[in-house]
Image (cartoon, rainbow, N blue to C red; front, top):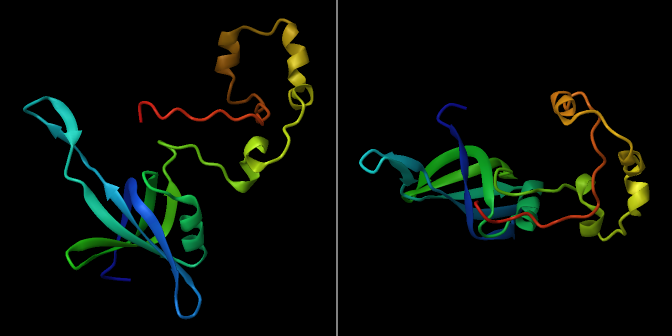
Length: 168
């Protein structure tokens, strides 16, 4: 595959995803990701935003349907694929696209909380059997923090709070 340049684009979605189908019925999606590089200004002694770089991304197959269903305007994404310069615009034929977890919380079908999935949450006492044991004195916090990696994972919560959009 000589002549192909693979790149990773990390930026924010701009506009909506355009979903179409080829003559053979294969789904194809097109969307724009705007990447804003950070540059250090020595005169001011601080970091500032550089010139925005719009990248037109295309995906095909099942990924196109997933992109059209999941991604909307202003969502931070990471996309990888082959780059090309066409008509003075940067294009990315994407192989993979995902939500940037540094900016968003993402759920998949298996981890979707009951409230968002339309299921009734389990009763609080049944969902958290360790709640009855909390009345007993536990070991010191410092010891628990040191051994957090080996401890068993806590059960997932069915109630969801909206993530804060401040500071992002």
